[in-house]
Length: 193
Ligand SMILES: NC(=O)c1ccc[n+]([C@@H]2O[C@H](COP(=O)([O-])OP(=O)(O)OC[C@H]3O[C@@H](n4cnc5c(N)ncnc54)[C@H](OP(=O)(O)O)[C@@H]3O)[C@@H](O)[C@H]2O)c1
Image (tube, rainbow, N blue to C red):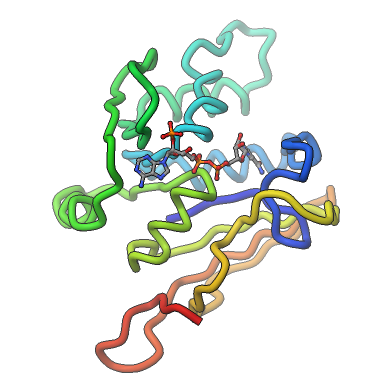
């Protein structure tokens, strides 16, 4: 599954590299915790990994809100695979580096584990989508238009989707849960436009 918090115009990061406008409030954060909880393995692009690394050492004292401590636990418990050609080492537990994103290897992993696998970082997720590896998209659309930046979804690829669930939040964010479906018998879920 690919979970992303995106602007209404489909960006996860604006032209200035910022995504503070995507910061979830308690209601959205708690909801995302529940989405991420079943994911036993996270596949990360290096950039997303570097952002998420905060959670490896996030404070767990009683001053921290419960939903924040909850996410810290969820993140620390999961296995992580980081895709990078530049990263020399990782500083989080249960983490290994892969130098190449090999769709066949991910397909094998999907076939062998019983838990969900989450992919994160729009660049890496785009590759997983193009390889037909993403079964579900979980998009949290926040009420902002940022005009440009890093696209949430890859350009030039068509993906047919079935809507599985929706939810609206007090902040004006909307959750859209989609399943990728093949167009016809034997066709791949994603294909070049
Ligand atoms: N909207 C939000 O709520 C939100 C939340 C958190 C973060 N973000 C931001 O969203 C941005 C996502 O950026 P992104 O989509 O560029 O990043 P990404 O997918 O997380 O990472 C891209 C990096 O992954 C590595 N990589 C990609 N494909 C690879 C392959 N086939 N083989 C080996 N390594 C590969 C490369 O690392 P190397 O350069 O090391 O080779 C590449 O530079 C980040 O800036 C993140 O901080 C947004």
